[in-house]
Length: 316
Image 1 (cartoon, one colour):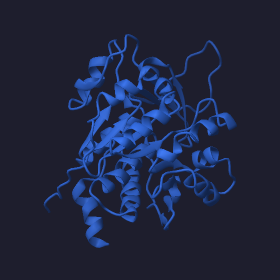
Image 2 (image 1 turned 90 degrees about the vertical axis):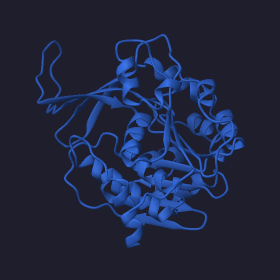
Image 3 (image 1 turned 180 degrees about the vertical axis):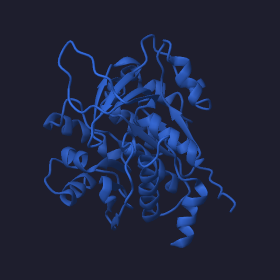
Image 4 (image 1 turned 120 degrees about the vertical axis):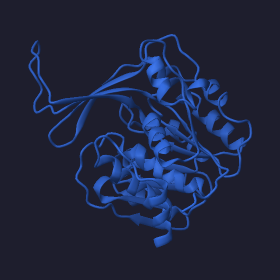
């Protein structure tokens, strides 16, 4: 099978950091003691970083738009993203680092410093993006609540991206300060420039401040751009999509879960890859669920190749 051509590019904007993941923590140790865990993994992380790794494996035209710190981790992270890293501005600070522990039920707890991601600015982002988008280009904004300097300019940033001709998607994640009316009022200032909202189920309910997923999605859609769609990632239940014209559901295949970290970011990579190739939302939903399922059921992490994804299109 020859890979279809695409003149469009997916620009992934946001948080990339170092992840140190250790497993498995059965109970919290007492203060002043030491606990031995079975395994550890040092790897690139952050919502934008995880998504970019999946896009590279899928061979989707993309660019990771970020910044970097200035310490012993700087060169290591940059070396993992050789096509994107030369454009990253350097902040004179430590690299953002997340330490995570996983629990027997596959849930995890994260501890993060601030580091370079809180210094990523609108100027940093716009300086790495073409002044004029090519037809079909998308920008995905990740780690919304963590990139605090960037978030201060979100309404202006999203407005500028739309003026440049980009389609804009946002995966905000869960705010460390939790949801509040003030935070929802801030989001109301940039949602009108948003073409796609890619949240998980509880994030969708939290941002909309509603009790049912269907009502929450329609409330958010009413604030978004014309023709937009709202996607809810529902873990083992698959994913759902709402737009003004349709409602879609894609079930997830049963898999043996190995590592759920970055599952939603892997979904984003699959979902937006389909849109980069001009495929319809139903196919995008299917690709997103397939990529996420493959990611969470493998260690070392693997992703489906583009041939298998386009094979799904032929079956449909």
